Length: 242
Ligand code: UDP
Image 1 (spheres, rainbow, N blue to C red):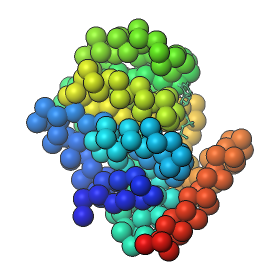
Image 2: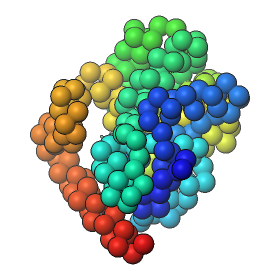
Image 3: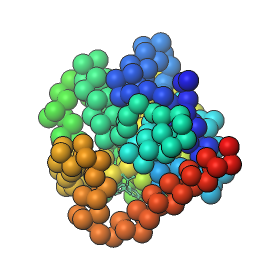
Image 4: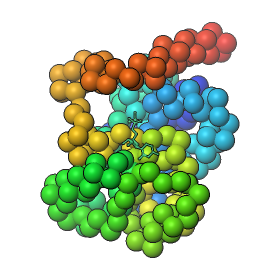
């Protein structure tokens, strides 16, 4: 099975290595890839917003399981996914590959100082990448100048750290004009890349407790995190109705 349905979102049934290989293979054949890294929050949002669900279904080329919640949900449904393919890890792997291939990258999103620090980090750690453009994420989607600047820069890859659904809506417009590019919404990943926010220690990540670490660092996330039990309840219900 190449796709796994979790509450209406079709996830690609790949581990990190195969996911990357697929994106690379597509690129080398001149095919771009619009990647959505979907966590339980995104899945629940898509259930309530048809236009966003349709965008993921019809416009995204690949969907990864961003977080242990989705992996658990898939297992509960009897259609397990091999592992989580998080947005941050996918982004850094793509940056490393992009550097080897001497690609052109555009980094859009986050606050201006975070964006600048993320660009500096990319230039330091992935020296063979060319950053062809960058800007903060505080603009209106109706601002055509922002979109035009990305298109004119002719990037091979665009990482958009705008939060959902803004990042997917923006990248959908980019895709119409840059069908050969790799486009990916990366949420809060520039905050981590820039060093302004820290990821949980590896041990905590491996215990699948990264969410608890993020909550401890940023207690205001509690409202958003209430989505996880709602998500698991919805999975249980959908299992009963099968
Ligand atoms: N952001 C942005 N423009 C906006 C709203 C948010 O650039 O209009 C940025 C924000 O600064 C942060 C990221 O988008 O860097 C969203 O982070 P969040 O923690 O919500 O994402 P998650 O990783 O949880 O999906």
